[in-house]
Image (cartoon, rainbow, N blue to C red; front, side):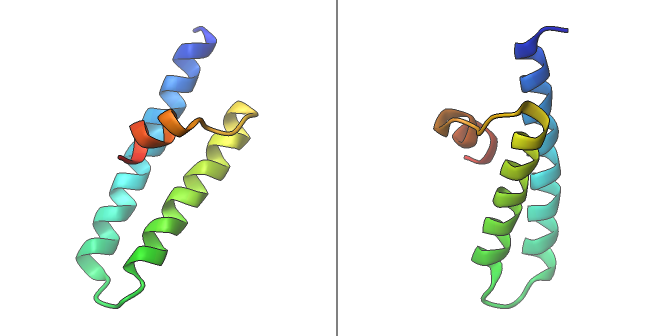
Length: 67
């Protein structure tokens, strides 16, 4: 597997995990901290991306994963 495929796999896995967490928050969280909770999900995904790839994600990668 080449480096591009590895990064694409990492991005897809993080995107799926973030979507599941976001859905859970939106369905169960009835308070005003939804924005902060969603920010936390994105921040943790960014940290995991750095851990797995050894670099920060680009703006384009962030937009691709989180819209």
